Image (cartoon, rainbow, N blue to C red; front, side):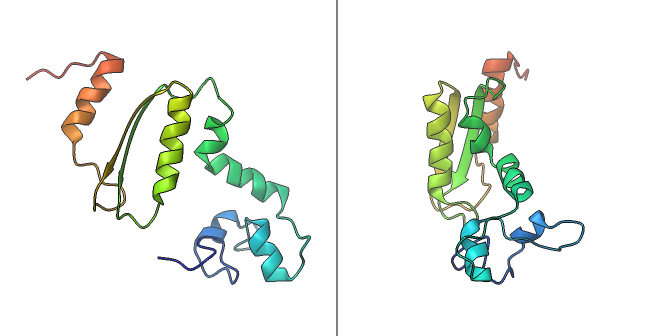
Length: 137
């Protein structure tokens, strides 16, 4: 859906760099690669404030540190034809959580789009297991 680099484009015509703007700058590069290419300076580094912001937005930053406050139970659904999140992202998230002995229920819906969840009844039943919630009919 986007050309490379997909999110931190060299010309900053993508919406994502706006997330890293400041009071005085509308948008800022958030990867060294794009900043270096855009400025022609092979040693350029993104502002530490921007790097911190990137870390805070990335769940793997916290999960990868074996954060004891991390949720124990995870329901992950994704469509194989979703264009907004690549399949390896979902696989890496689920695998990392499983390797930390978290309860993960991950499923890929074939030929479905981004954000699909075609089994809400199963989700309610799944939530009931760790919470003790029982749906009365």
